[in-house]
Length: 338
Image (cartoon, rainbow, N blue to C red):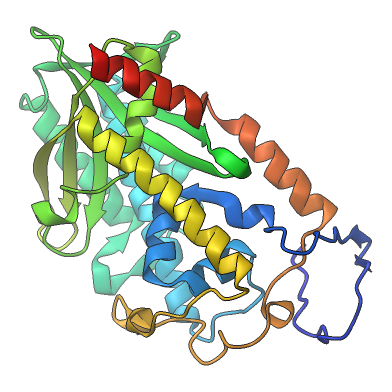
């Protein structure tokens, strides 16, 4: 059940709402939801800290543009379906079974479409068909799918436990191994409504985070390749992009994670998450918070309740790989010494 708290008055002292216990945070304490980081949320933090805060605190604001909500749902499902279909084919499943997996992954009405970006369930299965043709013709034939604990190394989840109870979570799409050299390659599956450019992915920290998983699977590994396979929805073609991730890049990424945590501490301590005006218009649309982001959090967000706390606490147990930041630093130093 979704509860709307927008009626709440600033001076109202709330103890319970709809039988939910509101947990009162200590003065200066950061809401635990703010501390849940990921690649996409870090991008949002950099683009507009205020929007990051509102998203993390589960804003009750309903978009005034239903078309935008629909497009967002289609975009999310489109990317998931293409990824699941490709993973199924790499696992050796038949094309028909891969399409069935796609159908099971699509969570919204089958007839919904984002015509502006050429995204729909039908067009997602077309992308999977295109990959099936490429794979049958020998694409990626030099590589084999890695198995971890008897299961295909697809959609591997990881959780980095950072200082002060911050966490960074993510998912790795596919791990491959070269049949002859044994080289380990991370296959990252992407979709783009524009033309895929190397600059869009070359310095992305997302792929560096995958080293957390590779540390567990291949402890001796210090560098690895990331092979981006980007499906362009307008050209209906796949574009491959290849990058190396080194130990030095990982060291920088780990440092940047700490800097982001320090930024959040600074914003919270000053009781101000800055609004970046240059981010008020992006992806061809105004931000959904434009004109209301100056309202108080009590008017725009949901309180921290016992159920929210339960969700946050359970989140940590959902990942296959859990590692502390201190352990990552130790491994970094060991590999640097080698």
